[in-house]
Figure (spheres, helix red, strand yellow):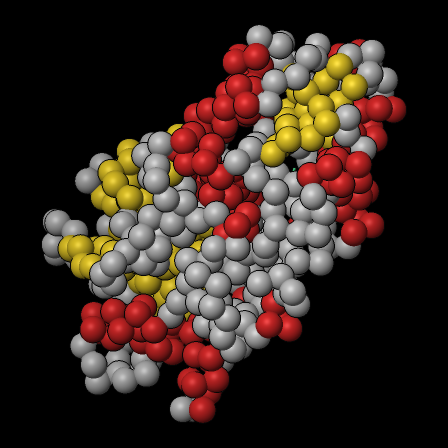
Length: 471
Ligand code: AMP
Ligand code: SF4
């Protein structure tokens, strides 16, 4: 559905949310949960708790281990908590945008945090500002709070449902009041959100890897278009469908790149998905080679799958320095290029004189592949056959994953042969969309950054989309 409307939204957020309901040491558990979700955002983090009366909050710009100390956690009283790790792009940095947000209102205080991106945020913000709302941050997350309180005479549940139905885009929301916790997922199911159990209490997480980290067990996923309500004094959780006609358009990039391999997304383990993609790749695009290598860490699973299926041995031909942040997070092109060099080093003795199959999860701008191929050639590789376990990325993401603009996407204006030449590979193959569905054993996924078929309206003007001649 390529329907373009007005008003752009320029803040992308690749974030993680975590929540605890009715459990001692809620703040501490959230700290460990957020630590397990740190790969989803390194720019800022925060935790809000409640003791059923007050809402307490600590937040800061930096990693979970940098922001929280034992003293800070001790200030976060109560058995309920929500937490957030944040990564933002243009216009979205600064402490004001670090979540969870806390809102004070005479009808009751509440706190909220969000993973995803609201595509009609500009239109909604304008409407709210015209009605007198004053925003504290430039984050689109705050819009939900204003929508909830737009008509504060309304029943709280009805107000939340109405607000959720006004926003369009990708979201996993956690909303915490002194007595309740609400967990909501957008009707397309673009972002993951799972429920876990810990000694009779409930925990919530963007990814199931955080359950393992705190000794909790997976219970179920929040369904697309569902709101799950946790309430004091009620053993059972309440489920409410706020949007009918829901879809299962889980973001395919969660499987391909973003999520941790030890997480399960909608019943599918991420490592197994990636490994299966590698196997399919080996069947569809075989090549004579001596060694298979993967770009660590996100491509290791696919590389082992390719090696097993092809019979070509897998080697650790590239080593990652764990103490350098993700290359993508560094802002300028120049910095990114430096970052790749700092982050990855080839193992000369394993690659020299060898014909390599180089597996990577995706090509966005092409910077990483180009630098890695150059490094491997300098280390003596005889041939480099690149196999990308996702389709060419031709369209930007509007749902919270930083995949760049049309101008920067190397596959938006170059065919596969041209990209192969630009990155300097001997051969280059991409996996088809059908392979992703096959590997995930599912019939639906969001594949919009590959095929432009966005599951929602985009609320962007043509020039804002930078799409002249593309749609
Ligand atoms: P590029 O150098 O722009 O082609 O980036 C491609 C590399 O970035 C791949 O090796 C991916 O592992 C990684 N990548 C893909 N998508 C993202 C993203 N949204 N954020 C950060 N890194 C990404
Ligand atoms: Fe994920 Fe791509 Fe869809 Fe964005 S457009 S939600 S990155 S699959």
